[in-house]
Structure formats: structure tokens, C-alpha cells
Image (cartoon, rainbow, N blue to C red; front, side, top):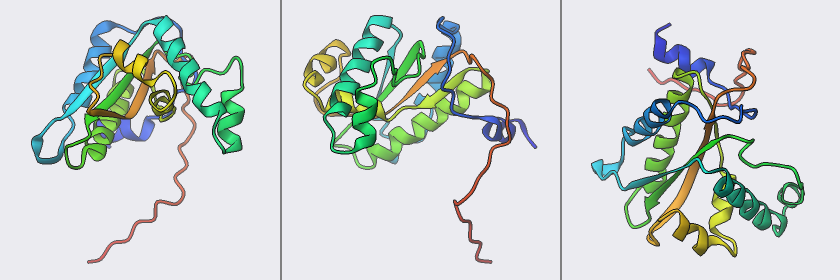
Length: 186
């Protein structure tokens, strides 16, 4: 198996991070991998917001949980009301991927960037987890304040994010893939 396929098959979502920041060069390499992802018609209309400030990460965590607590779905309400729960699993870095909502296929462009960052993190022996909960912070009462603090233009939507940090536990159990049916027509 070549190195790229080995890294993809080894990658797991990390939900237990060490609190210290990873090496700055490694974080920059992860973000650069996201920037290198394909985009529709080569437009590259994405914005990568790297949050490493603990107070800002906690503010985002609280904003997400406030929105979750008011949702109809019991699952979200339960998480929103868990006092000590951290939606970013205590990761010291969060990379938010936003995109110009006026560009075609921007959701796919941002998803491709997110996936590149997950694979890059694993290749650098960092943990990473795709976090969709981040989007909640941009639909709640603090949305405009958070946008302002993170310098996210009003015509950019947040599509996904990746929590990044050093792994507290390296999960190497065999990955089980069920579903995801494959059909070949030859």
C-alpha cells in the first residue's frame, strides 16, 4: 500500500486532544493542504479562519451550545445543556472553512478542503476531527459578533471546520466500513 492510502486508512476522528498547541509549521501545513484542495472552476473562493485563542474557542463553544439547547431535536438539546461538554473536544486549534456563498459548488469546495486537512493532520501525526457543530455559532444570537471577531465577510457562509491538535490517545483499532455500497459496471 502506498503512503497516501496508508494514511487515509489509518485516519480516525480524534476526540481527545492534548491541551498544548501543536507546532506552528504543522498547523500551517494542515491549512495549506486545505488551500490546495480542488475548487469548482478553480475559483478558490474559500476563507480559512484559524482559531488558537483559548478564550475565543470557549466563546465559540458556548455560542454553539446556546443554539443547540434551543433546537427541537432532543440530541442537540441534551448536548447544549451539558455544562462541561466541549464541542471541539478540547482541541487547541479550530480551522473554520467559509466560502463565498455566491460561487457555484462552494459547499463541495469547502468539504474538499476540510477532507484534505483531515488527511494532512494524520500525515503529520496530529489528531483532527470534522466539526459541523461550529455552524450553530453562526446561526445564533452571537453570530454577527463572532463574524466580526473572526473577520468573516457577510457574503461568506461557514460550511465546515476541523479541530486539530496533538492526540492524547492514538486509536489504532481496525476501521470498520459498513454501508457505502460500491457498484462496478464493466
